[in-house]
Length: 495
Image (tube, rainbow, N blue to C red):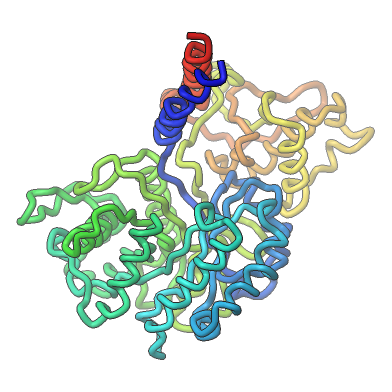
């Protein structure tokens, strides 16, 4: 019996590995910069992140208050070592060891840290710090290895697209030779440790600086025409894909074919100086919405179709302390008071729970609490809605019109709908981290009247969105695979 179990283990590990790869998909994260006044406290930010179902967050340091706030949330954090700290990290191993012991170990694994970025866009730095990156990365990796965490926390460094000397056509992508002295050992480090090549990509700047060469639609994923790579014949409908593939071809040219690319910053500003005419809320909403759909659908790129790509949107908040043009201070999805700058569904699904809706009974739409949501998620969403969400929740207080029935689902439904109607009755305004669902059936009862925006939502599009990304499909696959693995393990144990 014992021997049969030992023999079965490698096969089970292979099957489990296969299952993990099967479930692997591209992810969307958000960058949480804090170069601003009047930002909410880190614990409030963690609540906001949870409310909008954000699972991946990048910060630019290892701030203890932030690490504490994200403990036990399930959010995966990418933390950073700023350029200003590269010198001590590169000089002595003991500095990296001490930092890990004091700044990371007390909070891990309750706070789920998965990546450490050592330096950020060092080639853009006014001082010559590129030579410090590789020694610092190695020292941080060694510190992780001593703690047994080098397989769980990956080390890399972020880059601007300026590391390329050529990016068009994508097949001619090549790294700038002047950076070879530190890029080559870095790529060797990444390949050896299975870490991603991290890059910040901004089609906005390409359009802003060369509007006669780059069309706005091409930068916004809205182009109806295609750009052909003359060397490969590959067709590109957006600049984002072209820039990603330029990096892949640059890596292949140096024979680094196994390194994955991760986009650690991308986005679009919602406001700019008078000359920055493309920096508008509409364009920001269009870019980020199209980007999210493109990524979560695992579309890949023309050179890497179906390739998973993890992307972080810049940024969570507008940051008013940033220098430079007006656009630099207006990349946020949210204002410091936690209200949305514009509507965007960060899950990319736009799904509606059609089991909760009578899709023919009314011309209006309302937002209610999902009956399948957990009490903890509902309570967190309700607290946010009646607090930072600026909803008047007096109607669900004792002796008021909507207090009865005195249930969490009923109270949350009233609050969710009020927020939904006050914020344009858009899909994202009924998200609440997946605890809100839209309905066409008026939930009003007795003297408890639910407000309406009066919009007419297309039932057909909602049904299609729900079915195309139904969580029940994922659950059924998960259940089938679990049963399959159990059956295999039992058969190997007894035969």
